[in-house]
Length: 319
Image (cartoon, rainbow, N blue to C red; front, side):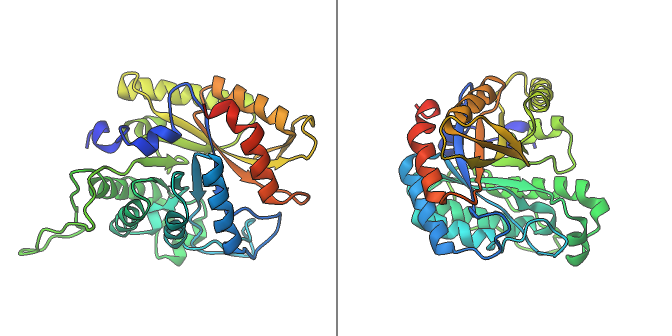
């Protein structure tokens, strides 16, 4: 497949989240307090409706197949397709993004069926973010060899991209003599944008050729600038200067004091809103097109943080 077949950049929902020289802001679900393992998903849907109404650009949903006491994340995540279906029914405008479906542990045709279903329910508001997973013991639990992760990711990407791109086609694992030609229903008239979340064991050149963009975790500003420069060079090599998005997942502990300076925390910042605006402006200037906020706080309700960001931060960027 060529890059244009795998990067449907004309998608209106992709363009609302990722645009040249602009920065948009989303939210990662679920929103929990530190060390919480039980999530009230009725409240999460309420927060999703609030984010949609207040103008956030995207809701991100993780895929966490299994839990272990050895893992740092104790949260009881819902199956991503179930949660995305609920979000599709509870929101109107906001993009829904998987961040990220573990492509190496799921059959790509099952992923394609889920993606097409969510896209239909949400009226073409879905962006399909995929990754390869970063927990090797899960590979053994699913009967996979972690040493095959890189090749498996590429193979599954090809099958998945063929199925969710218009015109859609099914690439079977095996096609015995006399096997019928398969297709996926419901029919979709527009391609579903595909986004690389993490590297999936691939080079940045491969990602630039095949994905609408690259989503990474937060790093300190100098490291992030270096990462964007590496990405921009890969895009220029692979696509002759075409636009490819760059996004960041950032943890946010928003202070009640609007003037509190930013302090580094793991994968993000504790900060007041004014310093948050300054940080996001710098990220935009350095080439970041989207930031999804992983909101956390032991002191404030998530609803209050969402409302403050919407009132005082979004107007700086969503214009």
